[in-house]
Length: 565
Ligand code: C2E
Ligand code: CA
Ligand code: CA
Image (tube, rainbow, N blue to C red; front, side, top):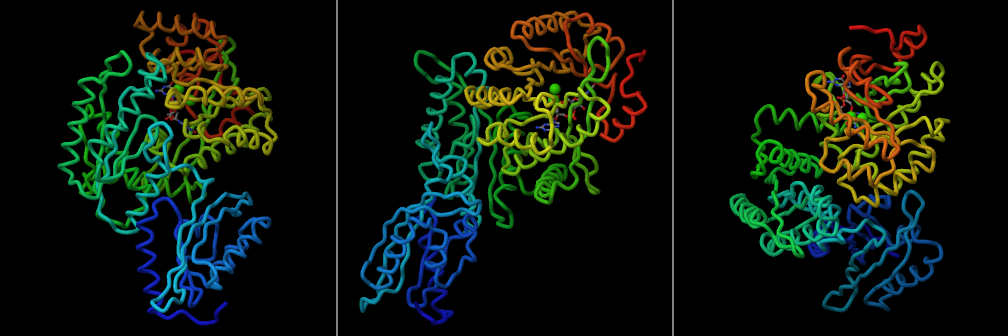
């Protein structure tokens, strides 16, 4: 096409126009070509999504052509040639483009040619939209989705636009779903979304992130204005809204932060926002919590720690390891299983227990990778112990963010196959937090897992309002009773009654029962009177490294059934 090397001036001009174009096109990829040099700038997201050589490219059309599906290539090249030959001033095409993983995405590309006053073509610019990409629109509320949220947040960070971000959530939506049904829950979400749009963000973006949580990004409103808006919304929903024939009063939680420092990535911003939100929920009864960058030392440390943990996931999971806690048969008290429990350790922070980071990272896009690492590590460790305890059951905790991924069951099947691990000796523990997911989706995943032979346990049973509702709808093999229900069982009759009803419920649904948190001889004696199948707790063993368990298995001291006080 042309051999001319682009001049500095032409390059600057290209950048200016490109920025202008990028503001218009929100969730599409922008490209702009200076036709005099056949020199282009393409948006960074597109370059990384399709692994193009660089944001700036000579002969970008030819490079792109190699990614276009062979069947679509002839019409694509004809279109581009017509543009460069000056025969066509616009471009509107649909074609398939190969992703780095070899699959094809369907894209549409629209562009126009700009001419100079003499009518010579100067620029060819436009937007490519990837239709296979995850939707930026939430289908229930019509607001932008969490993918839209992150795309916008990244754009603001890149453009260094100061913004305020608010994150607000409806408390106890799961309970409302349970009591009134999902369609009422959905209507509440729709009402909330519309209210946000109409009353808060006529000058900014509104997003539905996940479950019952919404966000807004505002470039114009001050922190005070947003705080005042939150109090209005809160009063409105507390007073009660009418859905069908019901008056429902709702409590909210909210966090906010101002972004003026652009030396951060979107995920760190999101972690900080989550931190403020969790603070509002856990310690401030829903009062708005503003994340301060002039944080207290303790908070700063916590964020730095989270950041370090995130980075460790990306750096080959360095510092993560698993401990295994024995599970014993309730009558023989012999070892029948182990539960894998995650830890993270580094020189600066020491050993960090999972409760300190998992709830914060669950929604992180890196989390599924960590989940897969946990699964494959647990399978390979457990296999070594199975040389001594052939029928061992291995329990692995699964976070709801993993279950949500469409390829989750496939990953489990592949990991089992790669490890040569018998599926029926793997039990996945899902927690009460999974009720954040759509019940149908959850049931489908469980059914698919069990169809491949894998066992499923419902963890921390009884800690959530909807426990009974969950197990009624979900076919699980085992129910694990949370240790908070047996902590005082030696003194407390009510706990004994509760345990009785739990075992009845489990029996009704054909599930086995595992009681967690057995710490003393006294607890063990009482609980042995109930229809319980297995025990877990410090009385039998703390979580241990696999090598230590293997050593104990060799000497036959793995968990002793002759333990006394
Ligand atoms: P969990 O699944 O209910 O795990 C049991 C927790 O109770 C473990 O804490 C265990 O060390 C502790 N525990 C066991 N026996 C006793 C006892 O007799 N007394 C007392 N006081 N505690 C006992 P840990 O390891 O700190 O794990 C906390 C939670 O973090 C787990 O609760 C689980 O929800 C989550 N978690 C741990 N590992 C993973 C993981 O690999 N993936 C996911 N998604 N979550 C994990
Ligand atoms: Ca567990
Ligand atoms: Ca548990």
